[in-house]
Amino acid sequence: MKTIRTKEALSALSREWHAAGETVALVPTMGYLHEGHLSLVRLARKKASRVVVSVFVNPTQFGPNEDFEKYPRDEEHDFALLRAEGADAVFAPAPSEMYAADATVSVVESSLSKTMCGAFRPIHFSGVLTVVLKLFNASRCDVAVFGEKDAQQLSVIRRMVRDLDVPVEIVGAPLVREPDGLARSSRNVYLSAAERQRALSLHEGLDAAEAAWRAGDDSAAHAIATVRNALEGKADKVDYVVAVDPVSLAPVERLVPGTLLAVAAHFGSTRLIDNHFLRGSGRNA
Ligand code: AMP
Image (tube, rainbow, N blue to C red; front, side, top):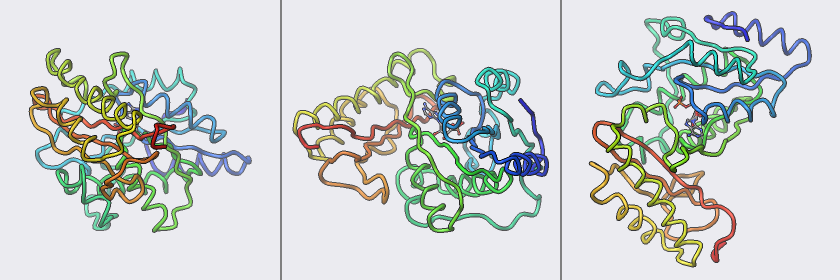
């Protein structure tokens, strides 16, 4: 596995691969890798002949009072996991390599990124889109894989690719959970044992809402109430619980296959997100 630190070296490698008739998949991450990230690498492997994983804690997607400084980092461990997974290259640039000190251009999405997490993290999605587009350009990737764990991020990236004619195929990968149902996240290390226990309410609430849908209740208001009920006394603060169309992120009244049930809540000082895409065939499917 090649370790690459500069955009120029990454572009050169990708050009070399393309000249040899290969295709390139990119998996963007912020590191501190877990099984969720590795599942994306495996999916990327099926989509292209070469796989590049980026490990970059992107400063521009963190708000002033967020956890950029304390975000967990362990480059050596990440690289060992990626080597074992058979990634062809890891791109781990310094912030000064990614951004000109006097950069003045960024990508702004003006609708989908205003709701859900965007309502609480106003600069977040602009930071995400800007770095993702820069990573696409540097890697010259054909395909990029993103997790459905960050469902709003996936929708916003798909919209950017559509609206700016970005020549990259976007692939979504299923959410990977811990054995007890907690969605895998690099931020789970922040949780105390008690907070972690309370955070299981995210998954329990979503499960209960999906079960009710499968049993025939297609009311979005009921599903939202079910999730809020599960969080009652468990979450320290609930940012949102929504049932939305996965493309437009507009709220729905009736749950249908494909509807995104999504939640963000705080446990102690840690903010977690979770979601279910309603799938398969409930009585309403
Ligand atoms: P992050 O390092 O948190 O920025 O995540 C990098 C990529 O991994 C994003 O596309 C995430 O959606 C994805 N990802 C993170 N956690 C999970 C998970 N539990 N299951 C599936 N994908 C995930």
